[in-house]
Length: 378
Image (cartoon, rainbow, N blue to C red; front, side, top):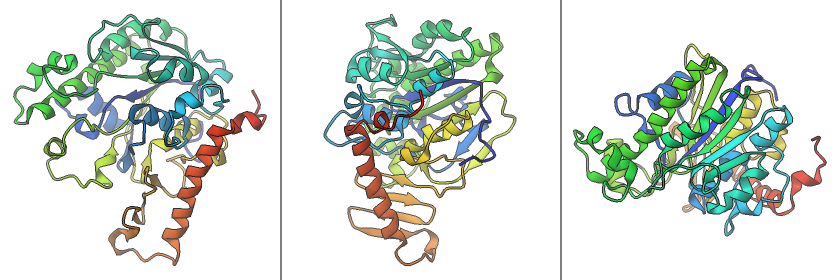
């Protein structure tokens, strides 16, 4: 359904990033000023969640890129390698005449991305094939940007997808080259080593984004470029006590643990647009599709356009859920209304049934190559 934001970014460039281990804790005006700028001067989603699925990074990517819930027990991205992934942004922008590219700065075939990512419509490069980043653990996001940006910055309009790796666990100064690189910049913080090491490696992502913005501006493309960024999963490489340390309080583990930041920023936005609707990574694809005026059928995706008037819904792997009206804990089979809200009889059961359907439909779409069966216009 169209709304006031439909086509707002039509014809622009899009850089879409799944950031390894990123979280709201990595957004800081002093340590990560570019992340802070992007997170607070574009669309600001104050109730965005990043649920953890079964195959951690790969499933997190899959949810964001496909708006489908991963199938438990398999590598869903790998299983989709021969399917018609019609609504993935690479394929959508290809139909508009763009030349979509994708990059990953760790081993290019890890999680079989060499099969899944070209199938999303991307010319895909990674370490070992086409992207000669220095072999460290983890590798540098900044170096990936420096090597890749010249390949597309003059091919406008462009769409580029990145899967980063600099924010990967383990969060120590001995075993993480990116944490070590930025160790001195966090040495003044009164935090434990894991918390400081986490912030340090996320600083490499910040420097990569700063480089992007500088080069886009130099090329005259900054105002014509949209940047979207979300995490693959919360930083589960940190112990709970380190997460509490970064948060400044004891983080509630059922829902709050997965609360995160979705960056959606355009160089021509003059003031932030705050959206407080509950939303999650499944909603990224339909939201971007609407903003770019891409034709899509919302019935065939599990997420919603966050900027529409549809009610927000956050879904978790155990079928718990959050809405503006309350939260359902599947482990205890308990629905807790928000602020004592009075709801219609059967509300929670109705949403729970919809959530069950989302899981079932996602599996069937994957197993049966459902988009390929529909004969959608190419």
